[in-house]
Length: 497
Image (cartoon, rainbow, N blue to C red):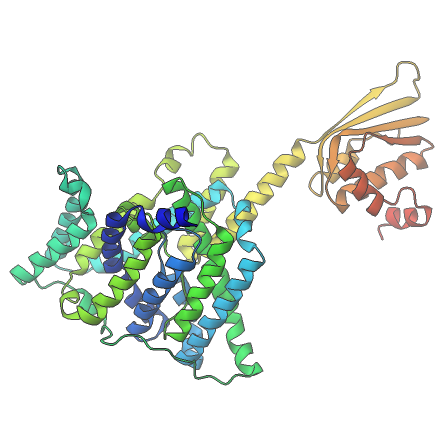
């Protein structure tokens, strides 16, 4: 316990505290923008980002990952806010948390092992594109000062780390924000700033019980939204955790992360905030700025609250161009450039899964749909590949010309069951047919049904059928679902019932 505490909290104090500042500054405009998307006051998104970051630092299963109010969650809340108002948003947020805790106890986080690498790569590339596209409004119909400051910001971000000593100590995105803010104030440059995004809160969040009737009608209103929020939130959090795992070469507890996200959303709903989840962009900023431990996540939330409540007048003067430069850096760093060259090396099915995931996420702006389609395609390609690896070899007995042995090799399941049946010659006149299953494995009812049909058809042609070599798992499923030794069921099977 003490060792884990030192690793998570005390192993990288300076890096975590400095990275927390950069993350907090990057969270502010996004939290405001997401609040506007959802149709609520900016403080709802800002309070949510503070609350979720602080709570998840203690309860989450992935250290160094940033969670806050997100665009994916905000999009799901638009209709609820329009039709029922803020109080129902808070109730939906609390219920979302409860559902996520339930998911954690049901160990649904373990389902991430079914998400293939090509889906993760597509997810990452799509997010990088979306992060970049989200910056375009800040670069459209603006003066040349904005382009110059954005270019200067990118120059600082990429060149500052090459400076001796100091370049390794202070995160370059932080230097970018401070330098461009100082230039804007000193030369009084007229550019869009954080203050132009919306009003910042001037008070600390307080405990709020959602002012909604505690009855079945309220539950039926918020439950569909909460279920969608829970699924999208957990999906984005699990995918982000997987990416951070790869970046830091460490492991995370996905089921603990599910519970942690749930606890964070419950606290957020009672503090007047909207539902949130892990953020790939801010997590990348944190990692690239030197943040590794839980302290960086806690620091980001605390800094955020201090900045918006106590340093509002200074914060409002940060030029959006500085934050745009930081987010462009994140987009460039997030995109898997290697995946482009890998298109020539990887199988066509892998490329299709990756590109389909990217296209669907970018077009729909819905991460859940993109990942679902990607996983579905990957599963179909995998099933098709495994089904083609199933073969049936036949051999006529040298001593007895009226006997034949078939040897089944590979996996027999719903995708290969038809091929299995077609591999046998039922018109050949034989007295004895031996089917060797020692190198085969039967996985489902479709496979057992196919075996039943083969056995019964040979018997109807007058042959004696012997099944040999079944492993224990195959024998169990055949004994349970097979009907070839049950006369009363045979006719039903052949008749299609």
